[in-house]
Length: 126
Image: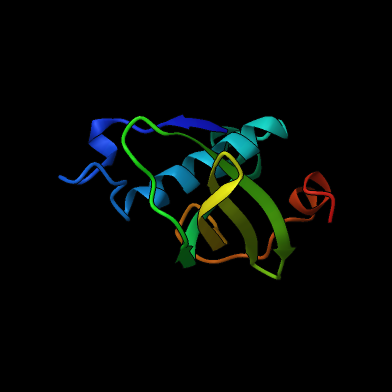
């Protein structure tokens, strides 16, 4: 997904503030869900589950700058018993700015971890 870097995304030096890469990754995961026809609200309403981030690994490789046009991608890496792992890249012109591994856990309406539903495994092609 394309992202324009604005003033609000940078520090005083015009470099993308490190925590904003998490925001960009979240947007890409949400866009990925929309692209496969299962936006977060539909997941909540139809499957009665939510995804919560349990673990993130991030490797900052190159800085991003004010006015950059960057791209955030999301790829499904693995589906565990109650977790879903995504590989994500934030790039500018094919230069990797940050690489992330994000582990999300499926929870029920009471906030308890639950197994990834079979229907969701089918949707994700696993």
